[in-house]
Every structure is written in structure tokens, then in C-alpha cells.
Length: 431
Ligand SMILES: Cc1cc2nc3c(=O)[nH]c(=O)nc-3n(C[C@H](O)[C@H](O)[C@H](O)COP(=O)(O)OP(=O)(O)OC[C@H]3O[C@@H](n4cnc5c(N)ncnc54)[C@H](O)[C@@H]3O)c2cc1C
Image (cartoon, rainbow, N blue to C red; front, side, top):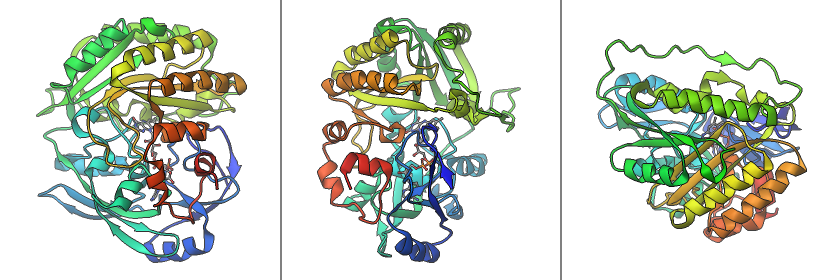
């Protein structure tokens, strides 16, 4: 079966095997390794791909196992979507503490990339809220893993390379309502962005910003901050569950030099008009892109890359300015550009992406060598700043850049399962 990840950069044949329970999975995996788990394919690059080889599809491991209404502890299988957890348990007063910009991902995918949300400075990453999981090794061994064990730390953010997560126990957080009080603040320079981020850390749980990638180091953008509200505001209705769909793939990317500048101008002006306090339901605030199914088709048949880096706080301002200047000179990027800060918290995984600093994430339509050349320039800026790239978004980072950015690689490799292999693992670690 031909399979793509979210960036649609390739469409290679895979031998897909659906896992449905522990015993069936153990037998199938022993016969079909090497392979790699495929959750919901929301990673942008090759972390979940194994061209010409086996994919273990985990979306069929989709059962809730137990929920304790008193403590907020949930045990569920690894293929359950975060959206299903949220929609089932939010009405009962419990929510996942950390979710990324889409809720259409599986629990296994959230653990394997140790995903982060807009509240890293308060609640860390997804792995900080995992109490335990069961890990199936490709030799058939089943292990119960809990925090403070090395295999647990290697699996959180371990890109699916330590074993197959069958189910996990998660700690949810209590909420009083599904609503957020929000504040929208336009900014006009990177200095202003960092001042806003610093000033918001104490009082606001969620912080994020859209940045105009063509504004270079002048950097204008829209800063959003939010807190959970105690009650639904009078007269506000929950958003409709209706989704729009991008019906087909256009022959050329709709994101190009002609569309980008006017779109950014329009978006900035429209958002700036909303400046000030407001209220929002958690779904449209946290997952705006989920409202348009298959939005990734807009980049045309050649697909797109996402480049997401994090740079340490000390030199973040200069590094982000240099990145934005390079992107502006290349006339590249897209309107999906996010700048936010991470808090100063110890990472739960050996290969967790977040570090104290600022993270920039941008989509780039795939223009072949032109795009890759720009990435080499960006890589040098990130390396010099002591930063790193995010595996969940990556499809091309060189192995030496990964090794330089992730000092725990040697320890991680001692926990690798030899029966697991992906396009990314071969690129970053060799065989
Ligand atoms: C619109 C959008 C917004 C996003 N925003 C963010 C964001 O804000 N923050 C962020 O951190 N990420 C973000 N992401 C990335 C996304 O959260 C991650 O790529 C996530 O890991 C995808 O999960 P998935 O279930 O689709 O897994 P896949 O993409 O299918 O797989 C991801 C990894 O998990 C492994 N895996 C999956 N299931 C298992 C299992 N049962 N056992 C072992 N390994 C397993 C796979 O082998 C692979 O290595 C975003 C993605 C999109 C499309």
C-alpha cells in the first residue's frame, strides 16, 4: 500500500500490518520485523515511514481500558486519538494536560515524539504526564515501563525505536469548563515578542505567536495567550463539529511567492483587529488547522517540509533574527509560521525536543534543491546557536546535526530494539 506522512514528500509502497491486541501483535511482529509503528501519520517527514518495508498500523489499538473519575488517571490503548480522549472526558471535567497543534494524533505517536503544546513553560511535554506504558519488544518480550527507568526515558521521544507501545496510563488534569479566556496582542519586533513572552509566563498558561515570515528580523506577528476559564461565557455556544475539506490536490502549490505576501498582510490585519481580551472554546483555539481536513494538499503534488528548530534562550533573539532574514532573502516560507518559547523544565525523554529557549516552526513548499539549500543555511544558524531540530517535523536533517543537537544519543542507542527500523533511523543512525 502506498503511504505518505503529513508532508506528502513521498508516496512509497509499504507492507501494512494492523495490530489489534497484544497476543496477535506479538506474533505478527516477530514474523514481520524489521518495521516501524505508524500511528495517524501526522508527523511531517520520515519518522513514521519505512519505504519498501513493514509498517505496524496502531490505529486499530483504539480501546479505552480504565478511567478513574476521582483521580483523572486514564489507561487506554496506544492507537486512541487524543481527540477521542478530549471529546469523551472534557464533558466529565478532565482534559489532557499537554496536546500539540492537532488532536488527530495517537497516544503512541504523542509519546514517541514527546509532543509539546502551547503550555510547555507550565506543564512540560506529553511525557511528563505518562505514568506507565506496556512496551512490546520485537522478540515478543512484554515490559511494564514506569518513569525513572532508563527504557521509559528512552521511549519518551524515542521515535518508536525502542519497542511497540501497546497501552499507556496518563494523568489528566481537572478543568472547570472547556472555555479559555484569551488575549491577542500584535507585536512589531523580536524584542517585543520576547518581552511579551517573558511577561506572560507567570500569568498565562498558553502562549504562542504567529509570525510573518516575510517580515525578516523586523518580525511582526500576533501573540496569543490564554488561560482556562471557570465557566462558559454567557451566550457562547460550543463550536460546530463540522469540518471543511480540501477536496483535491491542486497541480501546483497554492502557497507561492504570489500568494504569500498578500496573505500574510491580510492575516496580520485581520488578527490585529481582534487585539484584546476574548473567550474561545478549546478546540478552535488549540487546533485551528483541524477544522480543514486534508489542508496539506494545498502544497500540491510535491508536498512540503516543515522546519522546526529550538535555540537556547541566551542567543535566541539573534538566532531567530538570522533565521528570519535568511528566509526572507530566499522569498520562501508559508503563512503557517509559529514562534513560541519553551520553559526551563527538565525533559522527560533522552531525545525530547524541547529545551529552554525559543522554537520557530515554518512550512516550506517543496522546491527541490532550492529548498534544501536554504535548509543548509538555516541548519548552520541553528547549530551555531547550540540548538536542534524536531524529528517529528523532519525529513532531511543530516546525521551529524542530529548527534550534535541531542547529546544523549549514545545512551539512547543502548535501548534500541534491533527489530525496528524507519527511513529516519537509517538516515540518522545508519543501519
Ligand atoms: C497540524 C499539525 C500540528 C502539529 N503541532 C504540533 C505541536 O504543536 N507540537 C508537537 O510536538 N507536534 C506537533 N505536530 C506533530 C505531531 O504531533 C507528531 O508528529 C505526532 O507524533 C504524530 O502522531 P501520530 O499518532 O500521527 O504518529 P505518527 O506520525 O504515525 O508516528 C510518529 C512516531 O510515533 C511512533 N509511534 C506511533 N505509535 C506508536 C506505538 N504504539 N508504539 C511506538 N511508537 C509509536 C512512530 O513509529 C513514529 O516514530 C503537529 C502535526 C500537525 C499535522
